[in-house]
Image (cartoon, rainbow, N blue to C red):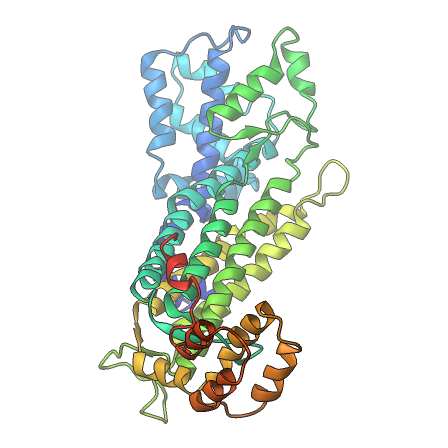
Length: 455
C-alpha cells in the first residue's frame, strides 16, 4: 500500500501532518541521522585539533570545508544513503560512520581520517548527543515560539476584556465576580511560568566511551587530557557535560524535560476545559465558517471542536511524556537497549503537544464574547454580594455576620431590594451603608482590572 497521510499509522503523520511539519527537521529519523552525522564530523574535527593526536595533524582548509559541508548540507538523499548502508550493516550508527567514510573518498588526506572516524566512541556517545541536539532544537525553534504566540493571543484577550465583569463559579456555584480579562490573565501567568520552567531545563551530554571511564582513550593516548577534550567537545555543541555516566547518559535531564512539558500541557488542558465551559454557558460564541458542519444531524450546532481536539491531544502527549520520564532513567547495570525504541517516539509525544497548542490557538482566535449574556448572568446573582456585606459587618463588630448572611442568601433567590433592606437595618456608619448599597454584581470586582495590567 502506498505510504501517504491516509495510510499513516499515527494521526501525527496522517490527519494532523500539516500541524507538525515544523518538527520534522528535528525529530524525524532524518533529523536523528542528520544530528548523528554532525556529531561524528565535529568529533573528527575536535580530534584533529587535539595536539596529542599527532597522526591526524591539522586539517587542510579544503578538508575543513568538505567536513563542514557534510554536516551543514546534509540532505534527504544523504539520509536515504545511510539507510541503504544500514540495510547491510544492520547497525544504524555504524552506517553513519561508513557513510562519512564514503563521502570523504580515498585521497591521501582522507585515508588518514578514516581510522579516526568514531574514534574511541560507543554508539551511545553519538546517540545521546544527537537526541540532546534534537530536543534542544525542537524546544528552541518550534515549541517555545508557539507557546509565546499562544500567550500573546491570550494576553490580547486579557487586555481587551479586562473591564468586562463576569460571574465566577467555584464548585460550579455562583461566586464573587471577576472580569473576563482577569481569567485570561490568570492563564497567561501560568503558561508563562510553565514555559519558563520548560525552557530552563538544562540539556546534558556525555562523551566518555564504552562505560563512561575513557578506557580506550587512556590506552591509546595516555598523556592526553581526555576529560578536558570531551568536556570541550560537548560544550562546543551548546550542551552541558554530564561527567558521571555508564555507557548511557542516564536520561535524568530528559525526564525533567518531559515533566516540564507535562506541566505546560496540564495548564493548557485546564484552559481548554474552562473555555469549553464558558462556550457552553453562552459567554462566548464561535466565529462560524460558512461551509463548516457542526453536527451531522443538528444543523444549528457550532461545536467547540478546537478545544476538544486540544484536550485529547494533550492527553496523548502527557501519557507518552510520563512514560519517558519513568522509563528512560532506568537501565539495567551499565546498559540495556530498552531506551532506544522509546526515544524514537520523542517526535510523537512532542507532535501531539504541538497539535494541541495549534488547536487551542485556533479556537482562541474564533472566540467572540457575548457581553449581554454575561451581564444577564451577573444581574441574576445578587447573593454574591453577601461576602462584601458580611466582611464590612465584621469590621464594625456586628455579631455573627457570616451566619446572618448565610441565613439571608443560602439557597434562596436574593434581589437587590432584599439586600438593600438588610443593609439598611445594619448598625454601621451611614457612609458604609451607602457604600454597600452602591455595590452591584457588576462593580464588585476588587482589583481584577488592575491585575490584568501586570500581564
